[in-house]
Length: 132
Length: 132
DNA sequence: CGGGATCCGTGATGATACTG
DNA sequence: CAGTATCATCACGGATCCCG
Image (cartoon, helix red, strand yellow):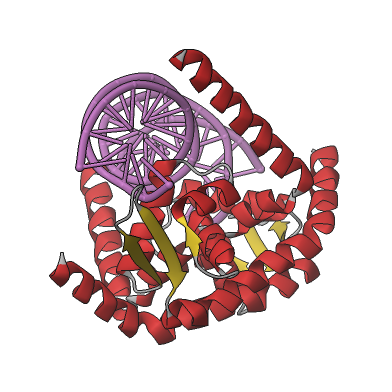
């Protein structure tokens, strides 16, 4: 019975996955943090509070949608604070919260590592592509 | 001329984006590293060499496709090594390279941070959702 | 039998246009 | 200026087949 077998496997996997998530909810947080845009936004905010347009220009390649979505998620997770100044035009400032500040150095280290080891990675890629 | 204006803006953004990438190729590496599956795979490999099936079970939620793809990319970037033992059945072991070992502690820190601060983030989410 | 390539449906993502 | 709404696209995940 191939279908029965497949169904069983799916059930087993589903149970294992749920159990795993239940015993380790931090997994979801890892998924959230290990996001390309999260890393870039937190890196950008490491220099201090930034306006929405500043972030948009700094990150240069992020769509408005993803920038807004990322900031909303980070705000919801208590990592960044959002301050609206109801002037004309509206001014919105984003800033790392104390909690966000504890994460920031780790993200900055990752970014620094990438900058330092970019050469080696590029070399590895050439070797790999050449061998292939 | 609205269209002309829009076209100009698009061109400017495109140039700015290219220039940014050209002056900072490490950005691509940050994008690569700041990936959910990359973080989980490197974390799993921090305990030592692992077989493909071990990784698949450990990460519990990753599809075969994404696991293979992630491992291939990491191998290409010189962060993990892939060793095939042509037995029956085939055995494939993955291991962090010296370069990967320099990145590993940073990833582990991120994971540790997530485990330590999960409670605060969960609390922040509840507050945020309640206010909304 | 384990590792992995392929096809295809779905959800996340990006570009564009529009609003407070 | 700081978003939201809409639509096109692409990467992701699941099922299936393949190869050693």
